[in-house]
Amino acid sequence: MQYSEVVMDHFKNPRNVGRIENPDGVGEVGNPICGDMMTILIRVKGSRIEDIKFSTFGCGAAIAVSSMVTEMAKGKTLKEAMKITNESVAKNLGGLPKNELHCSHLGVDALHKAIMDYYSRKKGEGIKDKRVEYIGERKGKCYCPYCDTEVPKATPYCNKCGKPTLEH
Image (tube, rainbow, N blue to C red; front, side, top):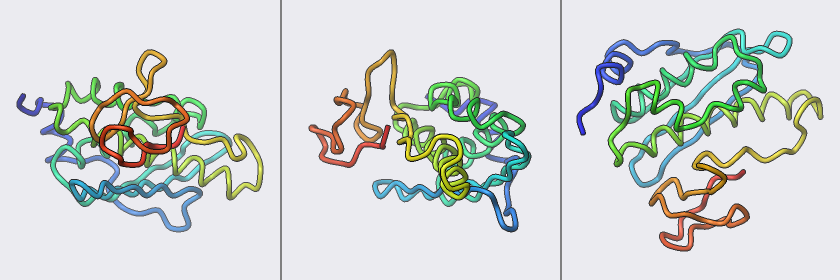
């Protein structure tokens, strides 16, 4: 599968690249298999994401995903942004090749971590200590973000590849 025109546009013209001085929340993720590293920074006003920026070291799909995630989250409430899924990101990008789907998992995980960091900095306001919803969840089932094998929700490691599953 080739990259869609939307993926290529977000790769060539990424939105929301940069830094936010003294961000309200920071989400950093990395994939040891492919080397992609993503950081998402958020500024929250009221309960909305007023500003969002990213920096990504990785392939074209990782950059496009980071750009799309920030576009989808900007202006949303924190609760709305927590409902953004890897599937919705991939759909908005016009699809991703199967071997690049892990990028959508990483991008959404970075966003969710930034939101959870915001809540932890607020010392108990909102979703205190709630674990991030599993990013690979589809139709009530969880899947490993590395090998796409179905895993039980409470499993910290994939039974097939042995890699850590994302918290949910």
